[in-house]
Length: 143
Image 1 (cartoon, rainbow, N blue to C red):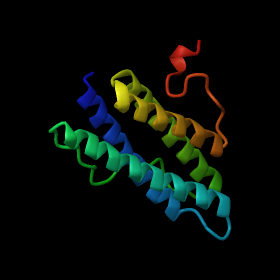
Image 2 (image 1 turned 30 degrees about the vertical axis):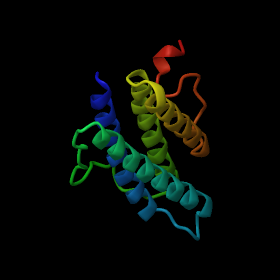
Image 3 (image 1 turned 90 degrees about the horizontal axis):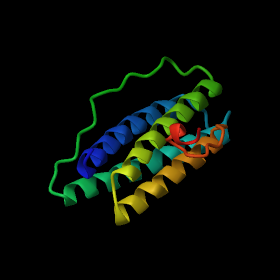
Image 4 (image 1 turned 90 degrees about the vertical axis):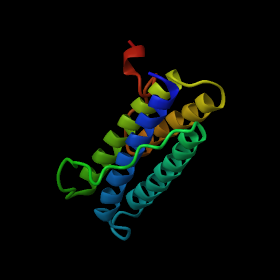
């Protein structure tokens, strides 16, 4: 996969993550679950910032950044804080996979940025009660 293809795939994943976190935020109560609400809000802002950075990286290469879909399929209604946390955890796992692929398909400052994003996704998993991984986003390397 070329660098630009990997950047585009990562941008597409960020569009999806932003959609998921927007829905998760709507199903999280700031008064009843302040810690979860703060985590979801922070992750939403983090993914928006990454999306914006990816758009710039792609545009700077003379390509047109992939657009967000009109909507994304969600796994169902988020009825409990546990369901919100589980969806957010799956989202971070998916983002870690995409960022691990971006690390493999970039060099220099782009790779440094991808490594930072991968590290942040791994840390977010911990915030969401996920387990640490030896190689976040690339479990096939751990065995």
